[in-house]
Image (cartoon, rainbow, N blue to C red):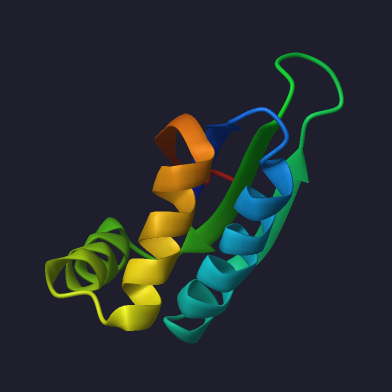
Length: 100
């Protein structure tokens, strides 16, 4: 089992737009078999930081899904990509193996 965390530093005041995009992305990932979705917003530290995390069975499961999502995005996928790109300063991913 693996856990993916995506972290975005939103443009000032744009955290709600990133949260909305993560909610949409969560539905896509849950339909693909990812579990234990969580979305977090900053309480301390850099303002307008939003991150989400999901669990999935294998790295292949995640990377296959990601490649398919970005290869030829439909209008809904492109709108989601644009929502992240136009409302975030930067972002990064972390993937962890779940031990317990």
